[in-house]
Each structure stands twice: as structure tokens, then as C-alpha cells.
Image (tube, rainbow over all chains, first blue to last red; front, side, top):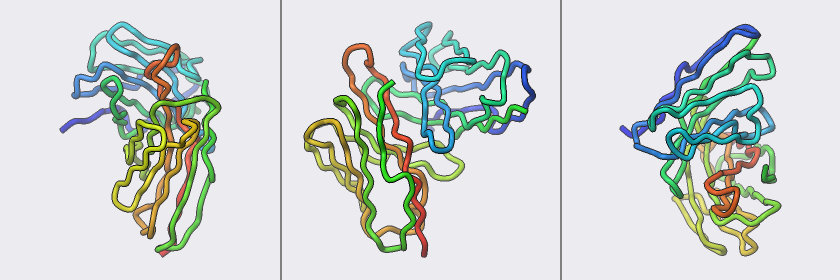
Length: 111
Length: 114
């Protein structure tokens, strides 16, 4: 089954404790992206990657890092999480010009 | 980044009513997409539009790509309880420095009362 898999689904952590949210897709998509969803603000892009070893900042990249060492994986790294990064995070992928497939989301709470 | 204005922000309607929502942008897009997000899930694509003036249906859903290429509309006819969710518009320019990027509206929260 074609899918985008994110882990974990829920995460509670404390300020400053590094964490990684993993994302994997099995559709051989070149393009992958991370979004955060906050009430009233919709989906805002954090980082995206057009292909392996190519990553670019989205609209809200501050406080986040990503890497794209393999085509199928695109982890999101928070080196020193802060409470304002409490949000619902979505990973997504697609072929160029085609529809975006989303994962089921990761609800992150930073205390 | 690009600004997409989606309205209304929320809607409370009775089952059987029709729904209309729209999205406008400050610049031209070559692709307009409409997604629906069910509670606890990621957004899922409903309709994709690729040409100015295009009108496309998917069951009770109909979406249009505005002639100016700066707006799009989504209509839901005869709403049912399972239409509940957040609807997002999204646009892509596919040109220049914004190649490949998809910009989202802030969403329309739809509640349907039985």
C-alpha cells in the first residue's frame, strides 16, 4: 500500500531535549516536505526536499533541521525544542507535478 | 511566502444544505488543489485543477479554477455528516523561484448538524 509513514504519532518532551520525527515513503517520490499545523494558521511549510541531498527552507524553518540522505526518508530534527514548537506536524511526498500524499501526523507537545 | 486567503474560516450547517468556500491569492497559480482533513488524519486530495476556467466534479463536490488564476472555489452539495472536517485550498506556481512549492490556505472548518 502506497503511504507516507511518520513516527511517533504522539510525543511529549521537555524544552531543550533533542528529538527526531521520522518520515518514510514507499512511492519512490522525489519531493518530500514537512509542514506544521496550528489552529487558525493552516499548514505552514517548514522544509522541503526536491531530491536526495537537496533541501530548502520553507516559510517557518527556524528551530528545525532536516536531512535527505536517502530518497525514501526525510527526518525532521529539533535540536533544542521550545514550547512554541508544540504543534501538529505532517510529512508529505509526491512526484513532480502530482498530488501530495500526507502522513497521519505527529502531535508534539513541548513542556 | 505566498498568501492564500481562504474563507470562510468556519461553517456550521444543517445536513442537506449546500456549502461554498473560496480561496484567493495575491499572485497567479497554475495549479489549484482542494484537500480535506478528517479529525486525527492528514489531508487527502479531493480535486485538482490545472487550467483557468476549469470546472471539475468529484461526486457532490465541485471545484472551479478562477479565470484570473488568482482564485478557486469549492462547492459541496447536499451535505452529509461525514463531510465534517477541515478543507484546505492549495496553489502551486510551477514557475521561477517557487517551482514545486505548494502554498496552503488556512482552512475552512466545516461542521454538519444532522
